[in-house]
Length: 56
Length: 400
Image 1 (spheres, chains in turn brown, purple):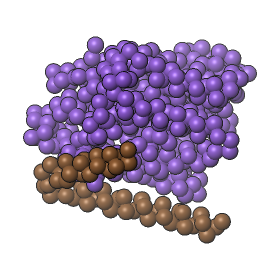
Image 2 (cartoon, chains in turn brown, cyan):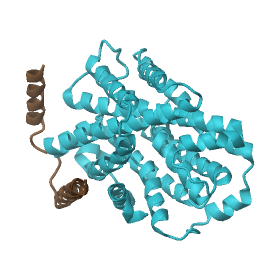
Image 3 (cartoon, each protein chain N blue to C red):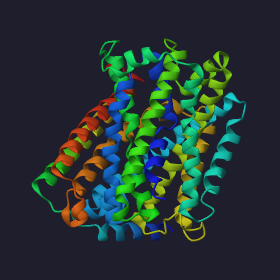
């Protein structure tokens, strides 16, 4: 079951390994902003977790 | 009948959490937020209309479209985040349902088991249309707040004076800003984008149906805003200045004032939770089915799409079980939903706009320049407000 699932995930990764969208400057910029946004969220989540742990 | 996905997604958006937001808003600020709800009508329509075009033209759900266009990194991110958000939101729907029926002395285990059986029984026919008709009945029940308002004869002149003219009679302080963000956050949720696109595909809508599906979405937008406005009028009239924290609490307080209104509130809250659980659990199942290549249509019987229905059952049973665990951190889960949702919403909306700009993908249905300007302004505003809402869930002292 686990092996089948892992193989399926690998197959999905192979199938979608290359983004099919035309990588225009606008698309690149939007994806970069999304990455930065996610990093920002992860950092504030980490900060919250750290401060909660210290306060406890 | 073309009408369906738009009305269902919009009305289901008034889920248990949404009903609570409107009820608390009305009790705290009277009618003064009504104009905000009207502003959110085009916001909801513009976002959801894009999913209609994308689904009808590409015949793909949003999860599959993201994998295909942006690759596996963004695909897995969207799929896992969507599933986590959906599962946590389904927990909040069960919280709403059990809280509502507890007022009628129905034990929570009975509510959870009954809701899961009902939701799974609705797909037994193996026909999308049958399922859709049943869900539309629950959508009509969600409008119960409208007759409730007519029963109390609210002061129309005060509603017009306070509610329709934009302004902040309570000042633009941190609390008002928090509720502004909460109302925006409850109008557009990530699951809605995935749900409507998958529903359009599962229903088999084609390019020629886009015009009617737009009408469907517009009607749904009006319904979702109408329900919000009428709940605000209800609690703004009967519970103004009363410190409530949930719709269930509002129902309890309304019972001695007018037992019919209190009962309507309970029925509406249960129905909202049920609709939310129906649609949100389906969203993740559709998304997983699309990506993993499982049979994933409501036009199939359980035996024909076992993984699709099993996955949905696991989400429902898992969410329902959490609510029944004594001492489960339900308040923490409710707050966590807001935070997790803001990690997905900007990505889902951005991908939507980017995909609607690919002529080779959507042909003549790509966004016009005007649509892009409107969509970008709306998406930008939603991202800022929902992010602040998520941050406020983490750091409540910022907005209190």
